[in-house]
Image (cartoon, rainbow, N blue to C red; front, side, top):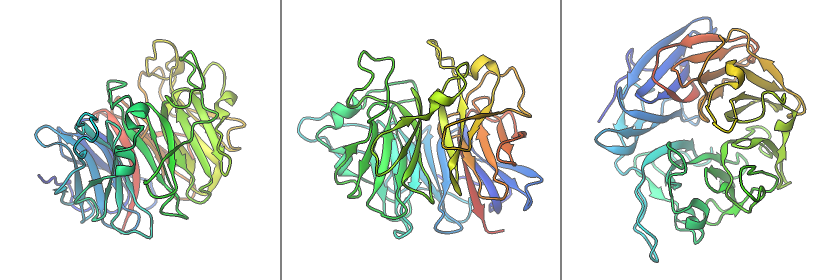
Length: 384
C-alpha cells in the first residue's frame, strides 16, 4: 500500500498531523506568516503518529492501523511524496513459559534512534510492546529484554486494555549522550529506564501518585500520559501524568509534583507536555477537567495552555485567541514546538483543529479546522 501527499514533496517547516482518518501536513512559509494544509495521506485509516528522522532530511515514518493490513508502519524516503509499508511490521514473538501469545493491536509511538545509529528506530505498541528496527523501519524485531521480561505480565496486566484507546507503550526517549540509556512509559506500570539498550529495565516511579487507589504510592501501577527529556539538558525530565505534572533532575530518581503550583481551580491533569528546546526550565501543558466523570474537556470549558518559565514553580495562563466555551482536549502526542526564534508552539484537538502560538504561546491562531480527531502533532524541517 502506498499513499501520496497532495502537492508532492514536503518542504521547509512542516507540521505532521496524525488523525483518526489519515495524515495531514501543514506547510509553513519561510517566515511562518502563512500556512498551507496538504494531504491527506492514508485517508480513512487511523494514523497514531507521524515523525521525521532528524538524522537526515527526507525520511518519515507513520504508525498506522489500517482497515485491511491491521497495525503497521509506513515509510517515506522522499519527504512524504510516496510511502511504502514495512516488510515486517512490529509483532510479538511466540509465547514463552505459558505466557499467552499476544497480538499487536496498534503501533502507537515512533522514536528515531541515537544519532550514532543511523537507521535505528523504536516503536511502542498496544499492548505494551517495544520494537526496534535497524533499517529505517523496513523490518522490526521485538526487544526481548522488555517483551519477554519475567515481570511483563505483572507490570502490564497481561496487556489488558486499561482504557478504550488501549494500553500503549509510549514516550520512548533516547539519552543523546548514550545510545544505551533509554526511558519509556506505559499506561499500567509507570516509567521505566534501561542503561543497556533494553536488556534490563528498572522502575522509575518514586514520588509519583495514584490518588484513586487505596495505596497512592505503589511500586508500579501509575499512568504517565507523556514523559519528555530535554534535548540539551538530558538530566531534566518532565511528565504529565493522570495524577499531576512532575519534574525530575537526574541523578536524582524521584519525581517532584510541580503541578501543585497550578491554579487550584484548574488542577494539573492533562495529556501533553512539551519543553523549550533551549531552556530546560520552560514547558507548556494543556490542562483538562480532572473531575470524577473525567469529561476530557478544558476546565470550565475554557481552553488554555499553561506555561512555566521557572521549572514549574509558577505557571501562566495563555489563552489569547482561543475561543470559549469549547469542549475538546489535546492528546499526549498532539503538542509540539519548533526551534525558531521566537519559538512556535503547536497543538491539535479532538475536534479537528490545529493551533499555533508563534510567540512562545502568548497568542494563538488557528491553522486548520474540520480535520478528523487529531492524535499527534510533530514538527519537521525539510530542505526548502
